[in-house]
Length: 149
Ligand SMILES: [Zn+2]
Image 1 (spheres, rainbow, N blue to C red):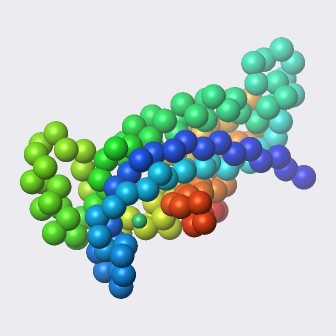
Image 2: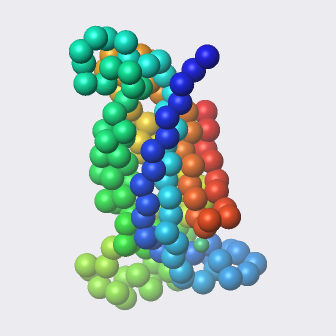
């Protein structure tokens, strides 16, 4: 038996899928939801702040905010091989928030990126074997991709 918890943050982020056969090739944005799923044992140590929890939800929220939200919120995420979109972002000036990534920014690839970004920061404090087991990236209300170990 295991316990899992989930916490999400949302970002407003632009992207495009350059090779897409249809409308996703256009520059546009989404209200993304990045939801971390953490597994572990409930803390049984008496009197500590996290007693009865896996990890404080506010601590997860803080990590998601610093490492995901603050990096890509109100930014345009662009594939390093997408020369046209990179040129368009460059025209916007030096203060435009452009995040160049090594992958085509689909929900699937963003889920993996967010997982790999957050995973090193999920640390077991009370010997309760915390581990990030999945990251879910909701691109639209009907579309979610997950990267799972
Ligand atoms: Zn899109």
